Length: 171
Image (cartoon, rainbow, N blue to C red):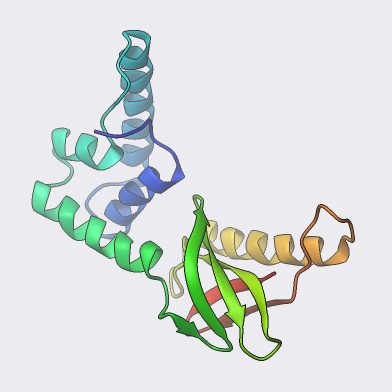
């Protein structure tokens, strides 16, 4: 049991679609159904609702073993997207995550300063899906836009690049 579906939970469904276990339409329908279930349960006072993966098992799209495999894959992609040494950066600790990225506190070994490194986790190279191209474009557009802004409450962008197949922004 977990929280209502958000981008992290939807990733389970995206992987199921990529593996051919269900169609995009089936995923969208299931997400809407789970949202309805979550809303109803929360109105009843429940503080937890099924996660999307559990719901996909209940609906017969995944087996419990397939769900565990997908969860292990997600851990490799999100929790440990790179080694502790990443180019000129030493990754110190994860400080945040969202639907499409994870942010690490890091140390820039060349400039001898602490930085944040944001990794794009939802993009997978070699996929022909238009959505992934849009995700990658949005990631780079975010970096370019932030780099143009100068304000005390907006962090400076030091670098945007790709290394070892991982797209990242150093800030």
